[in-house]
Amino acid sequence: MGTRPHRTWFVVATATVVLLLATAREAAAYPQFQFSSGTTRCGQCHYSPSGGGLISAWGRDESADTISLGGDGALLNGLLPRSWLGLGGDVRLAAIRNDVGGPDAPEVAAFPMQLDLYGHAAVDAFSVNVTVGARGIVRADDPSASGPFAQTLGQFASREHYLMWRPSATGPYARVGRFSAPYGLRFVEHIFYVQRYTGFDLYEETYNASGGYVAENWELHVTAFAHVPSGVATVVAAAGPPENGGVVYAERRFASIAGLALQSRVGIAPDEARYQGGAVGKLWVERARLLFLGEANFIRQQIRSAGLTQNQFVSYAGATYVMRGVMAGVAYERFQTDLSVAGTGRNAYDAELNLFPRAHLEVVLFGRYQTAAAGAQAVASATASLLMLQLHYYL
Image (cartoon, rainbow, N blue to C red; front, top):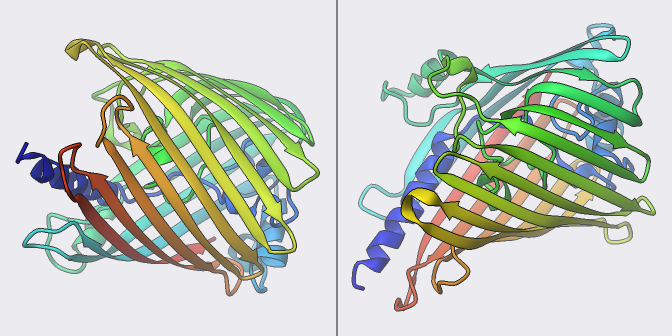
């Protein structure tokens, strides 16, 4: 029993290192802008019907008119005329202070977090959508200050590339290819538990056949997925267990201020299976300028090789103050690896400040404090902290 605190410290440190090594961003969205910006559907601002990825002309207009303090949200600040070809990009530079305890803590580093280019080419109702970017590196082989930047530029990946049929902004659609299946709250920050532990972590995008229907007040997305085979080229390599399965996400919106979604995912791997279901809630309080977001998932994990079955719980609850040019939020997260065993949970407390001084420009300050129970017999909890500053520019 005396080794449990040590093991918990190891788990916390390892998890934090993994978080920071996986620094490139998923093609995600800002769910905080649903309802708070006057836009009720995530697919209104993105080419993807479920949101995320390259923003559309509508999204670019919103970025200048309701999100940023001013400027021109068009590609390259309006230097290029609008056309049938949608282009975009994201550049994020980050500096971190990471403390997981131990003789080498805290760690301080600066690196390119995201270097992504997006393309969307449409002919009538059909379109091709591609995302190509660099895999971010915190600890490069070259210990010099330029090491992370040089090594990142040499590691490119395409996390999304798919063909889509979507005849109109509302109504039916279908797409096939690699992308993140619609599920849960898709935050820009990939370290949140509801993404890491539900099959939607960084580089866990699968190959999918997906379809659904988007209406003004509701939407339904159904996806069958297959894992990326091992041994493929780095440009399409994936992380996570080699699961095949399906995902269902259904959302109903109310009075343009609230939404409730039910979701389910089944993933079957050779030695493991995960069955999960959950709900997502969103509520915009106009008078207080507060958006409340919540997600909860129950997961039944079966590890055949070990003859082990465990029930897990992962959740997120947060409140974000949103006004033009500023977004400030706090959140609480919970992940318990086995509901039948006390002391197997971990908690995270987050605070984030986003500033949008002009269209295309964002400054982010993000802080996280994490605790992990050291076991039922322990008298203390292991802790870790992360402080991150980002400079984000989108084309």
